[in-house]
Amino acid sequence: MKSKLDLDRKMVDECRLMAERIADRLHGFIVSHSTDSVERSVLRLMGLDGVDRKGTPLANIIVDAVKAAGKLNYGVAGVVADLMAAFDVDVDGDGDIQSLAGGISKGDIKVKGKVKGVEPLPPEKRREVLRPLVESGLQRIKKRVDERNALKERLPMDSGPLLYVIVATGNIHEDVIQAKSAVEMGADCIAVIRSTAQSLLDYVPYGATTEGYGGTYATQENFRIMREALDGAGEKAGRYIYLVNYASGLCMPEIAVMAAFERLDMLLNDSMYGIIFRNINTMRTFVDQHFSRTINAHADIIINTGEDNYLTTADAVEQAHTVLASDFINEQFAIKAGLPPRLMGLGHAFEMDPEIEDGFLMEVAQAQMMREIFPDAPIKYMPPTKHITGNVFRAHLVDMMFNVASMMTGQSIHLLGILTEAIHTPHVGDRFLSLQGARYARNNMRNIASEISFERGGRVEMRAKEVLKRAHDMLGEVEDIGLVEALARGMFADIKRAPDEGKGAAGVFEKAKGEYFNPFFE
Image 1 (cartoon, rainbow, N blue to C red):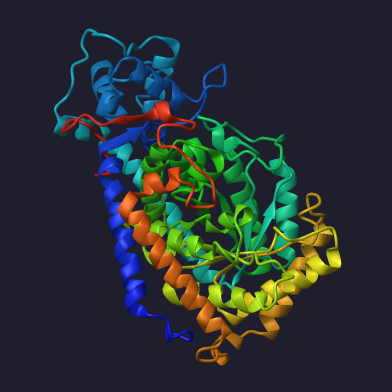
Image 2 (image 1 turned 90 degrees about the vertical axis):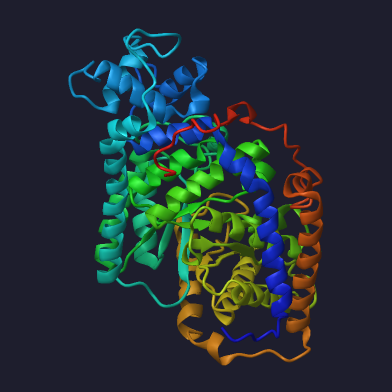
């Protein structure tokens, strides 16, 4: 991509190198530690599903039992292999991991203490015992990837930015109705907003749900229901429809597994969002994001990062460089997890105060800068919300300026601003008007990005250079003190998070050196 902003490529390269070193400094901790949720995701990858009679997920029951036995630092997979070999897993006669979980749940199979006949297997024997389960899980994901590729080949997408809207009724069946109507109106991506505070639950709810506050619970059955509905709507509309949900919070890697199995296309999967905005323990989040992103890479799922949220708590003019610095860091964590650039939906937002003189030029500068620095990434561009008021006419005008900025700078994923979202859950008619406006801009400005250029030394170019320079300086400071300390000082979003505090801290543990076993990492 030819630069329209005359950006200093040496400075951009230095930013990447600093971000790489920042991520490297944490990577040793990440790969030497695991979490309760990582271990539960390993069980889910091997096919474990369901809950006990009290509604407790079987994945939680097994991990909690292994943890109580003091064996979790060896990896739940190794303990499962030992138990399967010792008991021949014939508790219910079907010989799979589901039977083992049932036996542990009922107390028929003990994990704690020295159990007669249960001896640790050598590593190769463990691999042999688990190989059918591991291969089945990986094949299940591959099948879904192949399905997606075939459907996208047959149902091509629009060449412009994908139009992304949300549904958030709390009832999955009502969400389906709203999602189908949005597809008929022209939406390309449907994001099912997760029920408020689900990110703080240390388990994944089970089954279809019909009650949620501010959104609908992320469950595997809800994923399946919406995927089926969107496939039908896509066939009718003649284009592939992307399904979006959240792999964040205390069950980040587990939700990535569920999404991989049910062919979701995008997951909000940031390396720092949970730390900053949900007060989830810093170290747990870094470990969880790595394995969840490894799963997403294998499942060909686009991640969305959460830098746009920084500008909801910090000023968009003064703190724009924090967004760019965070994008560089998120990129490096994604690379370490095996994600290629085409799956890195890095984030930025149109959050400038409409009253600022030349605010639109600053927004265009930042959007163009992001597009040039991350040319192969499907950047997710977020709409104005912070300065939207009850004046719906003004809101529609501001949203249209956002649509124009998106087209001028060649964005990839365009989350629509909705007229009344700052006042109440938007009505279907509100969503229609926003989609109508975005489609109007997309069609009437189809090729404007390739036609437009910016004045050398002008306001747009100089604003982009200023933000890049400040991001460069910030990354240098973060490299000096470390990312954990930077978060503790509130350098991102003006929110401070200490590394030994936050929810889920007790669920982080060091792996047994040379003895920890996770077949999926291998």
